[in-house]
Image (cartoon, rainbow, N blue to C red; front, side, top):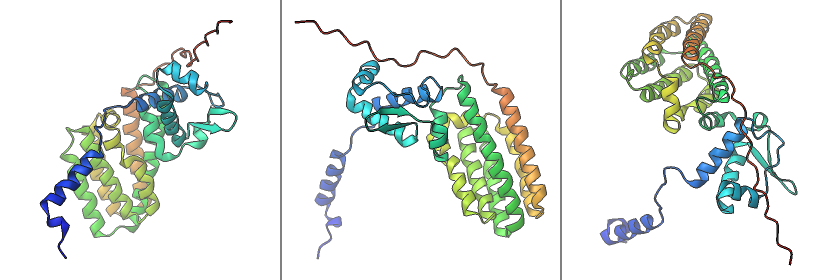
Length: 279
């Protein structure tokens, strides 16, 4: 039986069908813009937990979009755990600290600006998580590694040294090194935890550029890391990594101090309904 994959006309037809089903990708859709706007209002506290959003009609008019766009944007916020839709109560802002998952951390950070104190709070929490993961993974790696693990970690350090002039590439290499340490720790749980941050270089490159703005200093902590893991001294590995990252994070915080809270802006208000003329 002839194979259609060898038929040029069949392949061309399939390609045309594929192209016909695709649409140009916008840099930022209206749905994204609306979701970002509402997300910023929620994370900044201007839309507080328990607040019922205006009706779809009122909110779509206030934001200048149609209802389909608004529903799609609200759907994204609901997936993030920022709002919930209740029958008979409309869309309500949730207590996102109790509903949003760890995998949403990068998205939440992206939804705020560097000048927003809430941005710094989220970044500080992210750095604290990194310290916990790195210190405990290094301790277990010191106990459980084999020679191949040490070679893999050392190779990652070499790659890091080759990317000190590119913060985003450095971030990718840092994630790769951390994954090598997690594998040396023989901890699937740590690897899954690491996935919270693994997508940041691709999904949030501007954020990574800010977080890795001093790669020259950062690279100095890694050669000692390799040696302390080789020593099989778990407590020393835990202490060295924790203190090294605490120093890096403190320096970063001094370079990027938390701004003073600004006066809260007015929340999104529904437009005043027009009075109907009496007949």
